[in-house]
Length: 371
Image (spheres, helix red, strand yellow):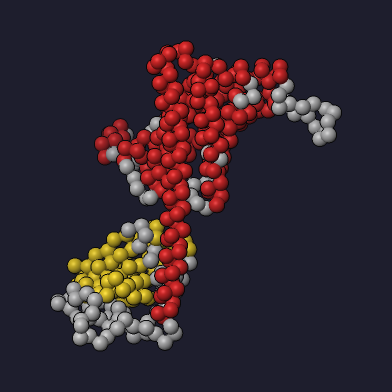
């Protein structure tokens, strides 16, 4: 155990049980052994020294009933309910060793005393009470900041979901009322709202860089950057492109992707999962991503003659920069790289789908029979 860090441990008791709370969040590879004399734990998680491997190994003050004892991993802590043998007595300490380690604290919420009991929670000569108060203050501050961040991320995802839902339902409503005649006016009807959503989506690249979310920044950068090139670099610059029928398909595809993606993130913010939302998140991309890539590529191809004619975004020599740039050529090169980026994005989604939606027993049996 010398190579492992010790997490903070809070303990309390009543007549029947000992309560032990290990302050280790997002615990993975958890291994627990409870015997009548001892408790052993190893796990990788987020503790007092950040993400590390932590461990515990100590003997109880008195023998316990290991069969009646239990534990659970809540995601925030690892909690134990240790059953005392018989009616039980008040333990003066948790461990057999009278020397109390610095990482062991009193859980006052789970400490019961008899009225005539003169014993009190153990405090060592080095000011353990002050250390406990400081830790609780630090822990409260950290959890408050985490709660504020979770609330902000929830509001961000809800804002985006409302925005893309508005775009989707306006497009559908106009199509129901006007049929195919509504398609040329799609950009004029929902373009400003979509611009706001896509500008806000830049935050999805910033959040991972700040460490506010666990995902990487590369894939959001590719997705948001690609969309913004289409929206701001092409459609906003060439009014004739805004009335093309492919824009209707493009906006419908984008909004469909997001109205199933953002609810998943809203729930994930508070570590909640609804199976139906998870299934939609990791299944709807299968038809929508290829359709979206096709629409984006088609928009770029259609825009080439317009940019050749207008010369927008292009500049020739001589100039102060002593360099030239031909935007249509850039688009042709980008379309080649676009295929690679689309493949990487769909590959990542496929890998995530396998983790989030493992095959059912029926599908496993069918695969075995096929073999």
